[in-house]
Length: 257
Image (cartoon, rainbow, N blue to C red; front, top):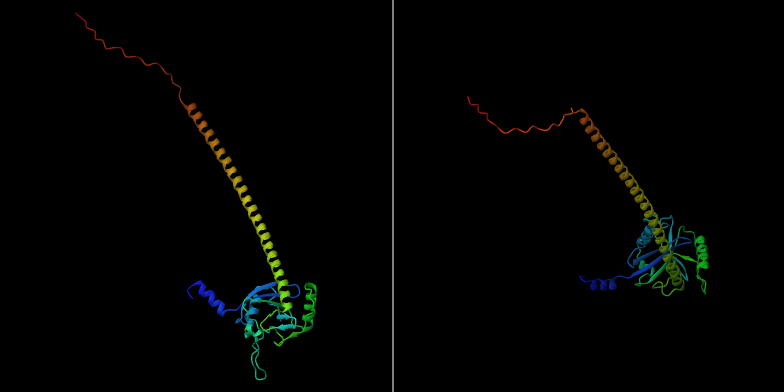
């Protein structure tokens, strides 16, 4: 695999990547994930926990909603004992739930607590508030795969409608997050600009005070020099500036006896 074309071809032949939108019912956010058919159920739950603030709730469960009912994606890791067999559904691959088609789109629902009656009623209220369907889907919860479309979603009506609704909410959530980030950025820049202007004003005041101090010191030095000069002039002995006598030319007198 030395070229981009070879890498792309290898992925097309060996990888089946699908997009998953997980909605926390009733009023939670929508999380977007991309998985491969050989990823485990435990890895799916790990991604949910790291991308949703509701993912770490106790007894959190995931379901695949279909027209035939809600199929639970179990994530149990129970060691084997002398009296009971071990349960390691967390190690099952996604293709075990018929999630194997490349570029398929999957809608999942996430609940905080596993209570059969609460899950069915909460999901019914959510469907009535967000979807208009010709036929009513089943609200039964299953822990087996009998009745699950294979391959999933296989044109299931509820899956298609839920994915569209989740996609709209996901875009709205991203837009709201971007607006919050932009608002926080504006507030931060406003605080930074105010701090910068404050520092500029303080620097100007400091520079102005320094100039005034320099001017005062210069004026004092000038006055001190004038006073010293006046004192020196006062201590001097006054002298008369007389004109200098010009020397007479040399003359020699000769006496004759």
